[in-house]
Length: 177
Image 1: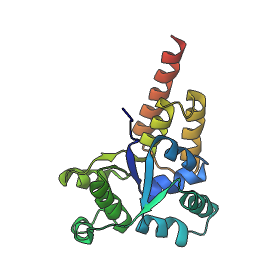
Image 2 (image 1 turned 60 degrees about the vertical axis):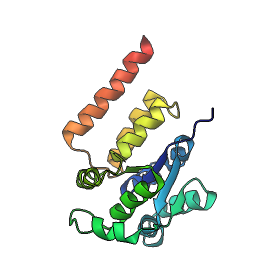
Image 3 (image 1 turned 60 degrees about the horizontal axis):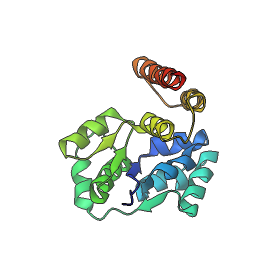
């Protein structure tokens, strides 16, 4: 029996921040990774920073696929919620269409997704711990990556950052046993 990789739809935050720290390429090792056309536009076309080139390279190589939304009405419905913008709305709609998981950092977008029965995961940290649990990085690399993510601009409230560090320490302890 062949296991298919999970389908992850990345929002702009996860895409940009993973590109900034040089880890975006790993996401396609553990998933079928997609961004929507709006997220591509936000991160590549309107982006003028070095990570734009990293993202473009991932798209060009097929490591990150661009998905074009079929049901524009669903996007419009999601956009009625002032808490989210077009990129997040498209990411959520694409997750529904592809029967995938929307990887979004913004808590408000995940709450709205829940209303519509769309699967979500808590963004960049979710991907970091997926990479760790699937052996794409060890605990020390994950710890270093967490520090790099925060230094690169990923906002984590103190409680979330502490929980992430505790979870990494649990992985260290488990490895020693």
